[in-house]
Image 1 (spheres, helix red, strand yellow):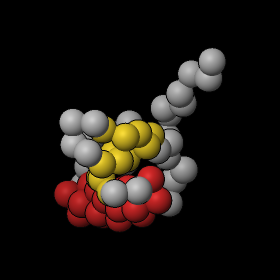
Image 2 (cartoon, helix red, strand yellow; image 1 turned 60 degrees about the vertical axis):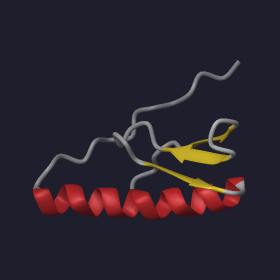
Image 3 (cartoon, helix red, strand yellow; image 1 turned 90 degrees about the vertical axis):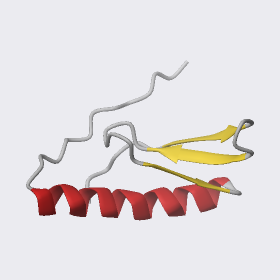
Image 4 (tube, helix red, strand yellow; image 1 turned 30 degrees about the horizontal axis):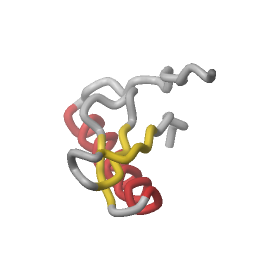
Amino acid sequence: MKDYHINIFFSEEDGSYIADIPDLEYCSAFGDTPEEALREVRLAQTAWLEAARDLGNPIPPPRYRPGIC
């Protein structure tokens, strides 16, 4: 599996942690803890990639890298 960057942050609006993979459009998940959100987004990533392969859609290369201040 490719090494995609994962963002994890707490959403006050949702009252939970959100994890997303910027390189995979709409690939995100949530959890009560950062670890749970990470675990769930890894499952979402696997499903996203499998669906793209099944549909014959291109798999984007990992490109997103956050700026470090």
